[in-house]
Length: 144
Image (cartoon, rainbow, N blue to C red):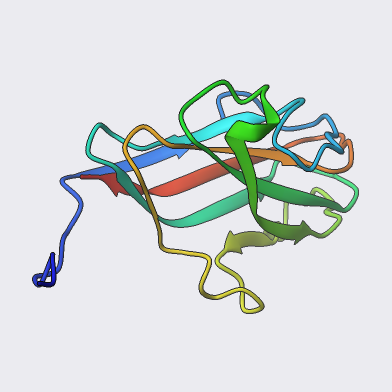
């Protein structure tokens, strides 16, 4: 017998972001090292619709990595899985033109989001190259 025959919607919207500015490189591909928490699913789980990345000024190119964590210590590699990556182009601060918006899902990976997470699972992010001005990462979704 099929479960959930009617669409399920999130109960509460959730907009989460990294509390500090991402500037430091982390070359680990296992979710350990310098990462930032960007989303925590609630006691009944959660759904992430998309992730937005904004440069805060002049930066060199880097890559954003998104890791799914099972709700346990992210310093333990077995608790994390590399889920998605997004190339972030170099930026130059301007007071006359907008800086590029970077967003996941991407056209090369359109099925990465929305992402439904089990109860208490978390998303962490990191960057592959040290940048000067930094990046802010925002996860947009909700909890069940």
